[in-house]
Length: 505
Image (spheres, rainbow, N blue to C red):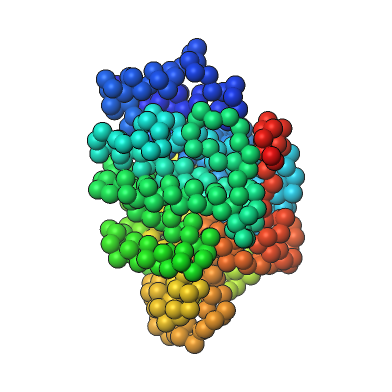
């Protein structure tokens, strides 16, 4: 019965989130349930709403959620690859099949007609529409809820809506600026028509309000799976949003939020043998089952997805694009590697240097299907990570450094490096850093620690960095690009421009 309700909820979402134009918003669809019908059904069976929120989360890993059949269209992890390539930390080292070539060449960010420009827009607005549908089912943005379960569902919906808007601000605007730039349409319900663009300040205020509401609503929520947003995830999303806006008051709140996550959550930093594959004298792996960044049970993973065979993921997946130990493009002709300049910047005493093959620079010892058979994992059972604890230790160090709290910033950074360097002497250099040099080091360590997880791009944007591509890029090798260059930000896609007459009013 629960499975059939879940399927019904997913089917309803597929209708309701088909687009933001009026023709998709029929009040009584002929072949699917309307919002009113689902709301009435939920009075008899409240578990329908729980199943509906599960359908919302499924958007994050399902294929085609960006509106195409492309093999780079598989939810959040697909856009993590976009982000790493835009930041130039991930290199597309072959183009036998050509997926991501428009990103690696910086074509998609300069041509609003391409699918690669459309897919993130469609995906994140689809998440927004799904969240708004659930909010509408619960009575609207400001509706008082009758019980804790409904309150927690509202919190999850608002957090997911904020998550989607946050990523839209990253991909489709150069940065916060003075807050006046018109950037994105805001939709806070399914019933409003096409909207004009709101300012950066209005969008950020909307995100912050949603996340603050979610944090309150999720108090006491004990989730049943890590793919659900709980209070810690909402706090993490708020920390990222405030760090991107970047006022002094925002940064102080980032410190408070990240201090709280680090001190009061149930997660811990990964130990050295959980970060990189290790081998004995005979070349046999000794930590196959605890390393590989492939298990939702990882003690530092705050938010992620437990992938099972029933979901049917294979080649069209993050693993199918990046992992040579899966049946993948990375194995068959489109390898993904680390930028050589970044690899060279990893110190010899840093265990993370061993995450990458020393010759071809593929991440063979960071991400891998446990069997470690080249091209082996055909159907995906290895999991997705969306957020982990190390992010917030680095964000904590960054916010403190930006506030001038340099001693505390160095202490936070050294807490991570103590888990990544062989000896204390390997990271003693941190004590001598100050000012811009300290900020540069925190940014570098963010790029190293979170390589392949889509987070470096966020750091480039919020810290107004200029990136320089290494010599091993097939395109634009050795060239530099600033955070606000056309190459690093998408234009609003042609489909939205054509279908939304209010966009520029």
